[in-house]
Length: 315
Image (cartoon, rainbow, N blue to C red; front, side, top):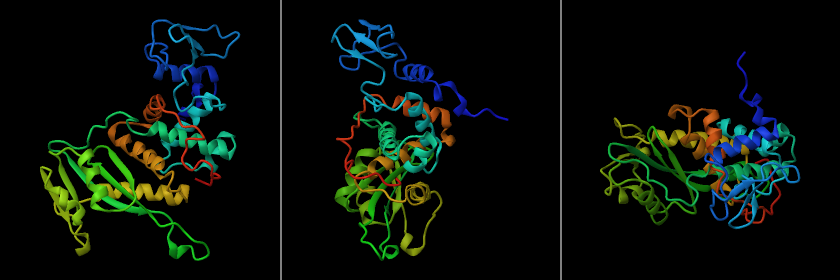
């Protein structure tokens, strides 16, 4: 019988979990997250301090590998953090906070906030410049959809209107999705112009939103869905619609409800798994490694979480 990856030491032992995280965030040794110093840094003995604590002799402040990451100031053990990261990274349609709480043995509130921090770690690029999708001889598909509860299925309670999501998918490559307030040319065209190389082959439906910007690309192919036209040779939007099918199965089947305030974080989660899928040579282990590395330089506190004052739901 094959040995489960969850039997690895760093999922159960705190010292092994600390070493695992340090190896990925400090590949060249400890580095102060405040001033960037790497030479005048020493490890503290750990007898009178918590394990993994270091001291910077430039800014004169102690620090650990979790400082400046989504794990900073967390009372949840590091090996539980790694378990949660692995579970979210290997679950194709996500994992609800209720399920995460049961598996990890933590409270629903802890699982809810834990999962939001991990989604931030999954966010592509952080504050850095994002390389556009596509390029010469590469095809990018663009389309939009709506997620949220249907008013026809909620006769006994008022529901918020569905939220618009626009996505750009490079065939055989990455995806980037965005929550937009309305599906209009003013909202979508700047996103397309910013995130797609001009020499790409761009595919969309017949919406004038896309035809108005399509001339900027090396080629713009369209299909008329209103006339039940879906594929004309290499011209189609089936790839981006396939991504939407995974997103909706996760939103409706796993999370059941996603508030508009947090929708962008869930999109980061689904984008991350799709852009780092097995077809691109990224398995569950590598995907978890990428999530751990993505935790650096990102902070999400309870006060700064949009809508964090609301009670956590099954999402």
